[in-house]
Image (cartoon, rainbow, N blue to C red; front, side, top):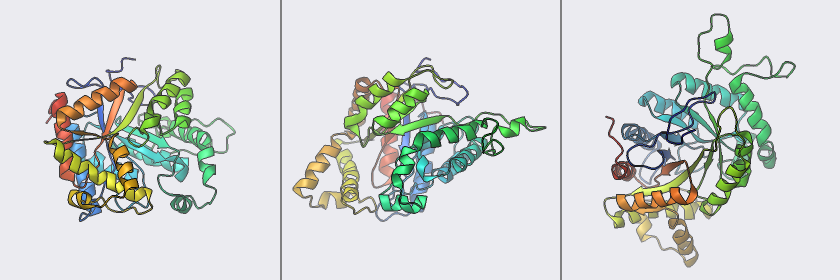
Length: 371
């Protein structure tokens, strides 16, 4: 496959199309962040605004991610958010980056994403992770069990079951052979059925080697969380490519990486904005999750020496500055990792800064304004 060419297959469209002068396709990951003094309703409206801007400026995908019990992140229900986004967009691919499979019954996910596929045919991605997307106590509440390792250990089996539901191809004699995820392929094979048997492509997400290897063995596209596991990016991508076996979905590896990046009109303003995300991470890592602080609060915060060391380390992996500086950083990262696609997430207090960042990045790459 040509990495700069869109291509449809049984699992849906995998390859993106590089626009303007971008060497690889550019996409967006939105965490639906809620800033101090803002509401979840405002954050969700901002998510729609960013998705529409991304569509207008030629970004390839727009994904949201499952998180729980985090006041500053309003994306606990990706399927619901994606349905809302589907109603407000027309072309851009929408997906989960990701749904945490151990938190849900595979049939439920197949039904949810079958419904999304029916709403937005041919432009829905199903990205799956095996982490809980939260702390252990919340995960136990989600799963109604204290055996939290069971879900992660059973991930390959859960994935296989989900794929069977999506394809509606359990073998005869299987306990689920007569169970169908609806909407889904069964409708096309029923008397009078005219619905397309297509279904969303499955991606595996990861921040370590487990999902990288599994994605490679299964011949699936792989998305790596570089934005919070930068040290593991190259080893994980190498493992994915070494493990890759061609499949009905892909004949060559396809790796996307999530990148934290924010552009502003001035370098100092970019630094002010990304500091809010760094302070959010300090609070999260020390058991004090909250709303995303304002730039003024972040600048006034008295970081301890240990917190300052963490912030410096964190910000070293956040590409920020003017549009040209961000473009240079993204290009260097794509070259260093060999990623086939970059998915940008801009963590900041207000929606205005994030919208401006994506507009500036699109301008820097000469992405067309599609109106």
